[in-house]
Image (cartoon, rainbow, N blue to C red; front, side, top):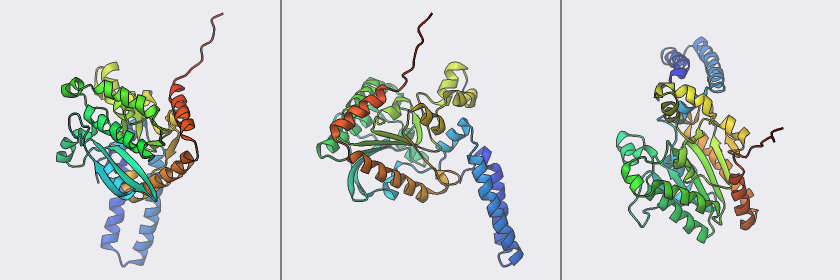
Length: 319
């Protein structure tokens, strides 16, 4: 597992525990010492992760061992059948879509995929989808609505692909169309930011009846490096930009941008994929039951009003 800079004390304590276990496994005194050290380790991890800065949260959201969409497809859902292509240009590997089962409920799952190895990341464009990816997602969502299947969107992208080809094929337009179509799609939609939630790339599959975030993810109009480049002309100020943007879960819940924060296992999702998947599945199942109790017309109306109300503020009349 790669170690982040702020995790260095944790790694040192883990190494000390492992050394004791390897060298003195049969020593009763050593076993007691290991027990005490493990208790200290849990406390250290808890204290460290409860006091993360915004920039440290970004680092956790990008951790190379953090579970991706493809991991949740096997850990949360059953019988996933992938659907390909947008019927216009091609099949974007940064956007995965398919039918699956969540418990006994049939659903459509849409999610960004980053890849782990360099080869996989290159094929997936590091999770940055092209217009064909968003067109594919929208086509499959319409298919889900036709058959009255709920839609679950897993968001994990630094942003939509910024290349010339993507712009030539209508990147901005297709994201706007997706947002418009999702706002009126007559089926329950749940969106969860599982890692990075960057800019229009996230919003292209981010309009839902419920929007949630994992505890150590971020959701923003721009990446901290991009913001720093604009304001301070250097990505070196990314940590300052991250703090100013207020884009972590603890802020966005207060602002009303998201509806729920899904707690991560001790030390982050990258330390325990199965426990994180279990918590995500519990949230999705519970929320889906709540949404299915509401008439579709009421769901669509509330979804529209929810997003229209974001950013509303009051102005005092000048005296």
